[in-house]
Length: 115
Length: 156
Image 1 (spheres, rainbow over the protein chains, first blue to last red):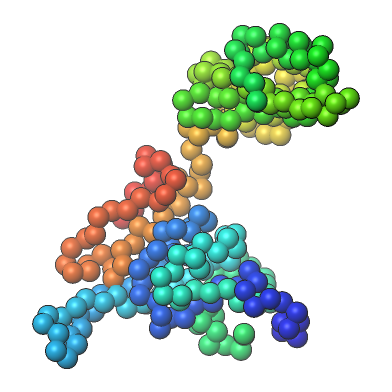
Image 2 (image 1 turned 135 degrees about the horizontal axis):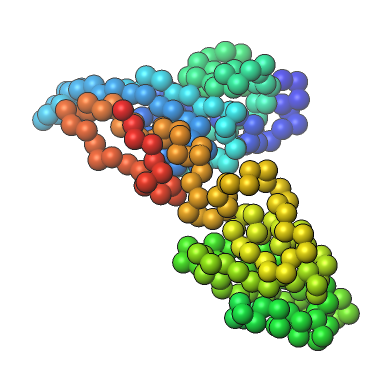
């Protein structure tokens, strides 16, 4: 990633996910014109101290972006209410087959070496 | 922009050519849902004036005179409009398909022609936040924006 210095920070290179900020609201999945995002979640009951009744929250189980389908329009980044998706200048994620372009939480959240 | 009757398509464009609009820039169509708009863009090369000429065609019987005898450059434009929108250009000297191989395929740029990728692919947005069992009930079924309901593949 030696050329990253020359690429603007908000370049449409790669869409990164911050899993902790994602509420599994599905807005990005539903707005995506390319249908390239999938999201799986399950509901969990939580009770805050002092709350009158427990609340139901969605917990993110799986999130994928198929960059073989993505057209890099950025609508998902725009609609995300909690900025869990953001553009990053990363570009070196070519794959030798189609399945390699389907990026899951591990890759999207940059728990590897990217960014 | 000038709107003309489709029955007078040839006459109007001939008259415009006499008036100096001798260059046909492009010819295409637009599916308005209720009808097709046939669009020609003509230019007067001396004055650089240009004009959009539009004629409404009924979708189920889209037939219009070919402009090829008037503008030779209309040839490929009309062949493309013919296969993409299902328009018949009467008097076209070479009405073969231009881009599409399949003779039997429905005109792909008609809004009524289903897009196979949208019919065959389950919409990922059909999943419910929190899973289908969220709060013990299934949320109202959502439909993908911009896709006619009858195209949408039924999920499990």
